[in-house]
Image: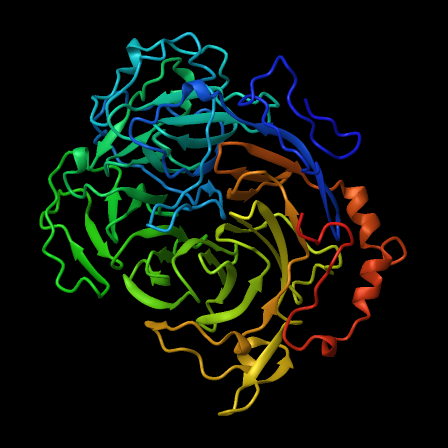
Amino acid sequence: MMNTSNGMISGPSSSSSPAANPQSPGIKTYFKTPEGKYKLHYEKTHSSGLLHYAHGKTVTQVTLAQLKERAAPTTPTGTSSSSSGYTAGSGFRSATARLLGTGNGSRALSFVGGNGGGKNVSASSRISGSFAASNFTTSITNTNFDGKGTYLVFNVSDAIFICDLNSQDKDPVKSIHFSNSNPMCHSFDPDAKDGHDLLIGLNSGDVYTVSLRQQLQDVSKKLVGALHYNKDGSVNNSRCTSISWVPGGDGAFVVAHADGNLYVYEKNKDGATDSTFPAIRDPTQFSVDKAKYSKSNPVARWHICQGSVNSIAFSNDGAHLATVGRDGYLRIFDFTTQKLVCGGKSYYGALLCCSWSMDGKYILTGGEDDLVQVWSMEDRKVVAWGEGHNSWVSGVAFDSYWSSPNSDGSGEHVMYRFGSVGQDTQLLLWDLEMDEIVVPLRRPPGGSPTYSTGSQSAHWDNIIPMGTLQPAPCKRDVPKLSPIIAHRVHTEPLSGLMFTQESVVTACREGHIKIWTRPSDSETQSNSCPEANPTSALQSTSSPKDNKTSLSSKVISGSSFKQ
């Protein structure tokens, strides 16, 4: 049971299992921001009896999938149709909930769920990583499914789980089980025309595309109507670490692997076609090779780095691809020309996650140095770094639905809101306003840096040349950000974060997901008035000279401390 009368979560009732209603001792059911209070609305969790750890615990991700109006009938067999008309959109994935985990290159979230729509099917009904796709005409359908809605797709151990985001039911509505391999990553395309909108990458390197709607309509625990690529790891048998549709790519998708390679596929090509690539000439250098045969799928191999590619993210327009890896480097590529644009090193250890702003101007990274870095595409360098986590940063995301309460709507002064989660169990929110950032001008040899406020391009030295991978900059030369809030949201290490129009979604590695509703419009308007919010009024009168090495910190009493 959840008791919100005193803002704290009580333990589960005697009628609920610990897995069905996890205890969160000492965790508040709300956190405060300058615009108002975010409140815990409901949680998603799992039944531990459904989990199978024959292949070990998995690296897990979460994907937000929004099904629109009913699509045209899908191809029911495991071979793709010869007709064209595939279109891939940007998809709605967790921006911050990317690959996380241990220091050996295994990065992911740890979500788990119940069996939902498959409750009347024997738990022994399982599938192999190299199965033949089930025939949809012989499957038992779920007549209660209306074909529309917003869902959370997540994986743990040997299963994929699907939850209804807008339902207060904690149990998933659907579970899909694998036997010979574990699902590791997934991606959703809301604009897929042929119905195959969900990508799934496995520990064995196998990749599937399926129709999410078709999976929800079927009550079994098997994938139905799946297309199979890289079967049995025939092209690459290392673990899939991250997967994504190419925005506007006509059904193209990319799959990153633990051996440092990334492959480009075309959905409308036969996934069983053999692909052969030349040997990698220099493992330390970025290289792109096309398949030897025109009918091959995958069609290209990108060798990114030595060691695992931990996370990938496309800019909203699909023009650029960002990758972060075990070697600690962020790399940004022009996807069309297949050229390295820029990149740089973390201060310490691997980078685990990355996320783009909606306008494509900034990129967030987080990793084992416990920091959040903000990269500028215009300047091709780090323009700010944030300190506030006490452990690895496991997820970062921009809040594209948030707008500053003080915004005049002219677009001249843009403020970005972004969030980060870490293995310290904390959610941090940050505000980035480039017009107020304190920018180091130069640092004379043996001297201290000088500072000025204003545009990055007006004050920084020459823009970094194209294709340059930079070492980590001296922290004294880069402005420091302070979080506006730091709130302990789970008892276990956090693994993922995403923003929706109505809520903020957080998840911990033990498989519990929390949905936090945003402040009401009336509360936001009230807090934006100086008379109603004396703290904000006081901050607005403070001078930038009071803090020459950081952005103005908007601290809210009672919620900015480490909880």
